[in-house]
Length: 531
Ligand code: MAN
Image (cartoon, rainbow, N blue to C red; front, side, top):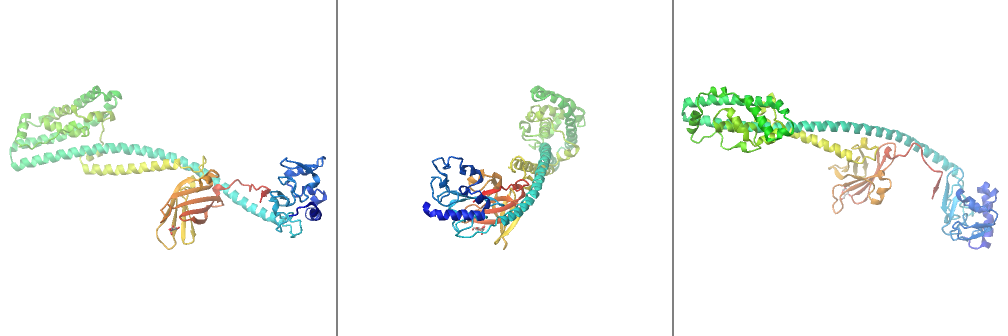
């Protein structure tokens, strides 16, 4: 750097001579005070008549002749735009035909060609050739290629957005179907639980009757009364079937009892009245010529072999049939009376507000077969939990940030791409997970599941939130952290993993190209830049 005005006299001449060689237009107008000045600042470097140049920071005014005299006068270095006299000054290369560049003034005459037009090296330390035309041609070629990529990417992005809309519409339909299915499966489970309850009560009753009958047979007591009892039992069984049919029939009638009424005690009594009238059938007991006393006598002969030993009617969890059977066996009278006996059945309160459950023909078989009822119940419960999981998945997907309101990542969700890098194969499944597998075999190592958009450092998250994504909480490293991956997205014509590195133990960085993050169809390049 030259520091005295006398020394600069020679250099200044050389500069003007060089200007006429490298930048004829500048030299021709002999405005060497404009040398190294950017187009935006040129007006400040033209003498408006006062003969004074005002330092750009406004700190002082100096004679115009002192501008670019290779001696630093202004504190901000603005009086020396074309020399390296001021620390912290700036030099502007015009780079005619290419892109103008602003450099630190310390790079002027440092023996290195920084400007493609060579204008930074006017001190004859080095001779620079003008490479601006060539650089411009390369730039144009690169821009054309980039434009092609952007155009292809723009089309793909449009496609992704359309697909996202279709996926979301379909998901709404799916959700409605799943919810309807869930409702019907839940209703079916209620019915099956009821059937199972009935089947259990029926089985229990049958077992009790069978054991009683076999005990009686073995003792061969009271054969005539026993046969009467068997006839009676047969008719009771038939009657139960009739009653269940009757219950089924009055299902419709129950519907006519309005909401609240069905829940009041009057409502329940009304229902019972209907049940009673529907089930009144005195001839049921006529088949059985034995009087209640005879039956009681038979039972009293049974040395304590009782059909029912506990009162299921006091248990609201026990079904109607079980209570009815119990009442019938306890009263040893007609089922009509047994129906009366069910009046205090605790289960009414539970049953009536939900309406009585009516069983279809097929279901009546289930009401007699506990194991069939149970296996159907398990099967339907399994189906219900499957549907519940599907509903949960739909909600999870809906709540996932798929790249803002357009949800452009919807159709790429779960799509997997892999790359071989050193001794591993890495696989990325968008917005799901990243895995690593040794090429020599072995199992997949979980490098992390998608947790959030943004970079590893919280500071990277704000800028370009959708240009990187984090996959975290993978398998824990021996003596290290849980594995995690930062996926850095860059514009590309296809979805491709470009490179994977492990800058810090078990903290991976994956570079991925995707059309999603490409800008518009144009290159969007400015015609100037800063070095
Ligand atoms: C495995 C791989 C590597 C990792 C080491 C850490 O070899 O997951 O990427 O650095 O474990 O022990």
